[in-house]
Each structure stands twice: as C-alpha cells, then as structure tokens.
Image (cartoon, rainbow, N blue to C red; front, side, top):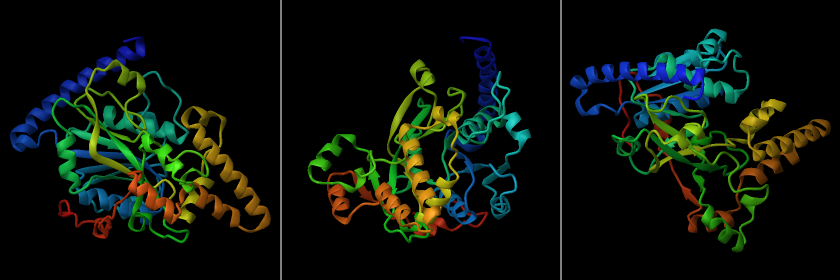
Length: 361
C-alpha cells in the first residue's frame, strides 16, 4: 500500500475476501462444481424502455444469472417494467446511493457519467459484495455479450480456476440503413478490430469506414469479466485500472470466443438523442478519448447548422460517414476478416417467464 487510503482498501478487501470465501464454501456443498459459475452483470443505464427490455431479455436468455441495473434516473419507468424478473435487481440512483458508492477518502459525489460508472462498480464489488455471484461483467445498455454457438458454454469455458480477469474484445455494429428501428434485431454486420489488416484494406480501396478517422468509432478496449473472490478489488468502465494490471497480482487473459457486440451508433434517431445528451464539460477531458471529443465537436457543429436551417440533411450525412459502409467495402472487409455477420435469434429479445432458465440458442 502506498498511502492511508490504500491501507484501508487493502484491509477491507482482505476482510471481504475471507467473508466471501466462507460464504462460497458453504454454497459448495449444495452446488458442487457449479462453484465459480454464477455470472452477473452490472450496468448504469438511461435508455428507452423498449431497448432496455430487449437488452435485459437477451442476457437473461443466454444464461446470465443476475443483472444488477443501476438506474441513473431513480424514476425511470423501466424499473416497473422489469419488476417481475427475479434475476434482475433494479437499483435507483439517488444521493444516498452515490454516498454509499464513495471509495475511502473520496468525499465528492460523482457527477459525470464515467464517474458514476466507476462508482457503481465499487458499490457492487465492495458494498453489496454479492455472495451469490462469482463473476461479474460491466456492460452498457448498447452492448451484448456474445460468442459463436452457445454463449453460456463459452462463458463457462473461459471462466476457469486460477483466472481472475477475462477481457472481452469488442465488435462494432454497422447500421444497415438510416431508417432502422431496432438495432438489436436489425443490425447483422459487425466490424472486427484487427489492426494488422487495416492497411491492406486501404490499399484495396476501402474508404467508407475511414471517412471520419479511425476504423472503430467506439471503444476498442472491450469489457471485463472479473472473479468476485477479492483478487480484483474493483474495476472501471473497461476493466481493472492500469496500475492494478501492472502490479500483476492476479491472472488476466483475453477471451478466445467471448465478445462484446457494441451498438455504438444505434438507429439514426437514437444517435441524435444520444449525442444531443453528451456532456460538454472541461472536466470530461480525462474521461474521454480525443476521437470521442472530435465526434462530439462534429455533431454539435452539424446539429447547430440543422437547427438554424431547419433541415437535417448534413446530420444524416454525418451519420452515414461515421458509421455506415458501402456494399463493396463491406464485402472486402468480410473477406479480410475485418467484419463478420452475426445474426441473433429474435426470440432472445423477448423477456423469459420468471421461472424459466436460459433459452436454447
């Protein structure tokens, strides 16, 4: 430990680790070799009810054991819509919750979305410390955990004894058209972040994914699954902090098959709503990449022009330039392994009956 705060965190972490070990040991007699195989997700959300319902349904149907959902709006109508799902824990976020989520030595309540996301993961892993979960992933409401074939089987193959952190790399959804309504059901093409083949794609004349900069518009770090045995004290948006990874006190692997499908754009109307609500503050600099800040600047410039002229033609073109591919470029990218088709069973997006388990995939 490097200071008083680290000493407190180290001590409390060891206490919780011992407590969790005892609780898991008691569970072992009843559950046998399922020990270490109860998997949860944690998320901070603020999205339309219809999107949240499909997002929840998908993860329950692929076999996630519990979803802990923190609602940034404590009056969110989705709280009532999901009330009948026993594997969903809805937590309204008010000032009391944010005070509970403060790390030792921190006194200011989180205000920015990234700060709140860090806070909920601290709250889940160190305040709630759920004994009925062994692994947890932080995901957003525009992300789906996916693997070829049966996702639950892939999860169980990846989450093995001795490993504490599994990083799931992202695949980025490509909107097929401007008038799409439901991204989860309609988007079937996803970009792969294989940087070793991007130069070849450009030599072959691929242009549309590079019109506004880098190949991926969203994050390239992916999301983490971490074991709740106390070896990983907490995680941030994309995984354990760099200093924690550098200390190498636990085993980290990159998932072979598990991926995060990232619907960064969504529909055109969803994109308008999402980017109109982006926080434009000086203190966001430490929480966003230069790429994201440039995207925000472009959107605000074209949005202001659209409001002055009463037309959104240039906003529509910006959406195409940022996210859409020409048919020719899409074919080349698929041949190069830089894009792939993923067609999800639409039944996965219907909420299961409360007593039902994972849906066959």
